[in-house]
Figure 1 (cartoon, chains in turn yellow, blue):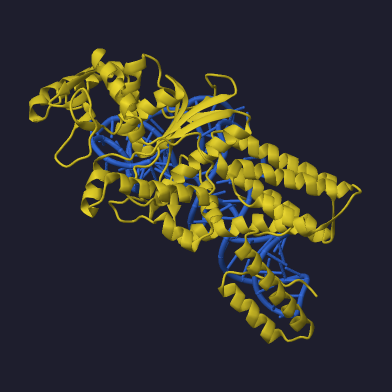
Figure 2: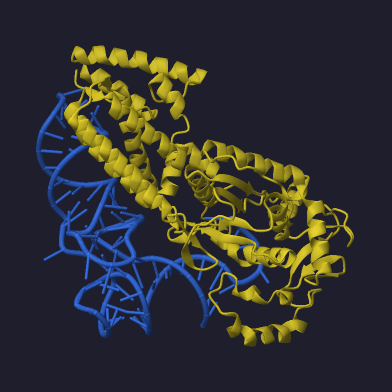
Length: 479
RNA sequence: GCCAGCGUAUCCGAGUAGUUAAGGAGGCGGCCUGCAGAGCCGUUAUACGAGGGUGCAAAUCCCUCCGCUGGCUCCA
């Protein structure tokens, strides 16, 4: 299995610290506003990685944090006149709801920054003791100079080539009228300003800086060195670089063996972001599209590349996802015979081939677009075969097909309600309300069949059209 | 400026030396259908940003250039 490592700019063979076990940390959200499609891309990218590692038999210990205290949260809650905790909990709750709807598997742990404050304080104390940090006027800063390879992290630059720049920084010093000794230094602990939430510390009242929470959580919940650290591209600098500096200064060991960064969602080839105002909120998208269509859309491009948001692209995803659902329905509805046949033996080997190609693609840095292409090709082959057979398929084939679909579900999380569906033999959930809808549709369908038998097509077509407006698609087989 | 990534048909998007260069969407034509949808077949399709270099062989490796995106202390 190969994984692209942002630290080395190369795809590398994936080796874990402990065999068959993965320690993984992913930077979650800062809970100050509603999530947009970009946040979803990140969540789903790492969900796929999480799922696939599990599929490969790894025991995955994955931690994803919530930043529930920072400048933006304080500013926002002050604007609204509410407690910072109320604000952050509101958006954490909303985010968790989205995660469930979009079928992101629960992480092992989702700590909040405010839960690890005592641990953070000890972390900072230790950094000061080791000479990597210093206190000034109630704030504590990390001394970048104490970590020589700082600038080489995520930069394809050799340490030896850097000496000139170091001098520039030192000369600039007095132009920065702050407490920092070096302008590159960053805050580990921020002194409380009037009216801000605070925690007691050896340096007085204050709160943690942004980067320290992740370092602390990794250490507390996963250990000195982890296998994978993930997050969005935009977190490389300064966030991840600072995390590495802090953690490695503290432990004297490598922080993470692999850094994985996901690409952005673009709109008209520009990054989707709050400041450009070109973002689409998850809450709005979910009103328009099936969550699984959004999932399919995001997975149809590689996690590292950017994906362009457009109506057309989402429609394409919708169509392809429906193809997948349709073939499942079709095969589920066909009756089986116990005898085996040459034709179906051949189809089974095609499924096996597709399955092994999907694994091959996923083994190559989680190449979901190739995996999906493989699924699409298989669907076409199966449709062709079913078109010929029409009524009966072999049990052997049906079993193998659904085994395949189960594995697809494990890896991609495409069918959150699959198990229920298979039991009932029909697509759709078995909730009370949905059951009523389903029963009503069955009645309407039966009436339409009668109308069609009597050649009253204008009326039956009208009903079909109206149902389609409601988002219910009915297919008319030959009578 | 520095660092990274990208440029493949109308569009989305694979392929990192030897393949008929995946797969999908859209358009058009056909099969099927009472019609539509779904599905199937064909077509669009002799598509690799430009120019050099290395190789028996280059979309793939190297160099230069052009264009695009992102990061360079707010960000998934």
